[in-house]
Image 1: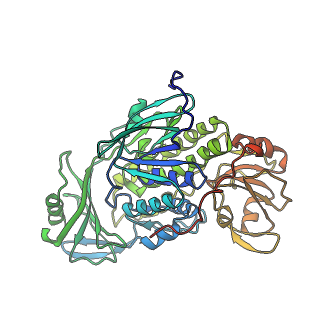
Image 2: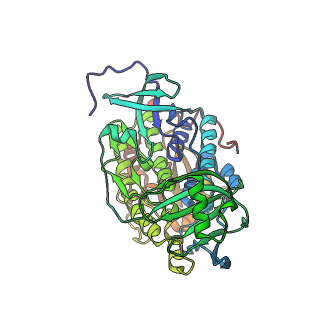
Image 3: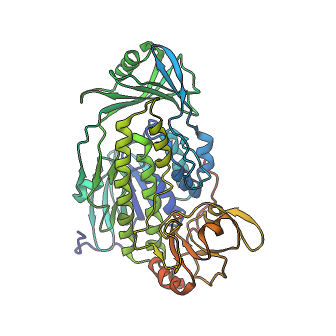
Length: 517
């Protein structure tokens, strides 16, 4: 609980202190920095973590990264997933697709997963954060935090022996499964033992394999082993499930796994650049917010790696939280807006926990076409919605239960504007602002901080139907209405009614492109 005896500092060190320099923390920091919110990231390690780890970027994550200005760099750094190549007894058994496209998936300009080593994703996000004016400090560890009514005080220790006290309006724990922030708050993780096998993941260099396939030796026992070529490198990511709880991941034991489970000799592994042993867990934090401190990513929910959801769901946490913190800090929206973060993201995380567990248990089997189709239907995250959120208001008199509703991700379809130009919707939405779409009707006057577009024709107009649609900065429909009567009252939730007190979002942020690749 906040301690009212603490004195409010004249000026907080930063607006938001983000603890953890992984993909979740860096995504959040980029989103805040482009809004002009003073943001600082601290990372315990002396440098951003190595290892390919979460290498799969799903469609919804790629949309988020496009909005944040790092899509070009990630596309250049990665590649589409290669086909799977099955091996038995040293012979190729044919290739197949791990993920079959879903013909009924929501339309996205990113129709397939993109393969990028996690360390490279982090580097690109770091460069974008610095370009936007945010700051990152490695070798800095949170040792304690204390809350007051108006700020958070954090003690930070450095690996060089120094220490200091920082103050922030808000603090976000994105510091992983063993979160210091979560433990400091005393928030429990609720989970269950689902009997998931432990595993080894490593980045290795291997001779004797082509780099056009994701190679799999599926037989069990002793257990499947996979080697996936990592684009932009000479490395493969190795994955192998382990029977039993005790295993020490070293270059020698990794080479032993390759020799035992494939037709390759141990010396075919010419280098083990990074390796890790892990026990998959499924757990969900009891709450995502306590006062001025919030949890995101693995600090809030732990996923087995099935389906490659962990990194992606953490990025979506950040994308949901970033604009809400921005509205509270920069636009004086009520602090209660932040309660909607847990209300929207905790159910989404719970649903993905079940999905990840099912896919991890199923493994990757060439004969299981149903699993390939299932992965294609559910892994893209494009269908996640917030229809039950108090921020989702559908006031239209006529709407189809099967159609697009408030709370849904708005479809990225082509739209025709009064001047006759035709652009896809997400090109109009890009940026840290709200967007009001007036579909086949006249747009009303709105406050600053909202972009307005009139849509007169095209697939988007046919999909949405006539009306006003207020699109949140994370591309979900907040308000759907037949007319402007409810607009003013709805906007007041986000601090957008009183324009005199509003700081223009993103005014000081640099241009969109240019993240160093």
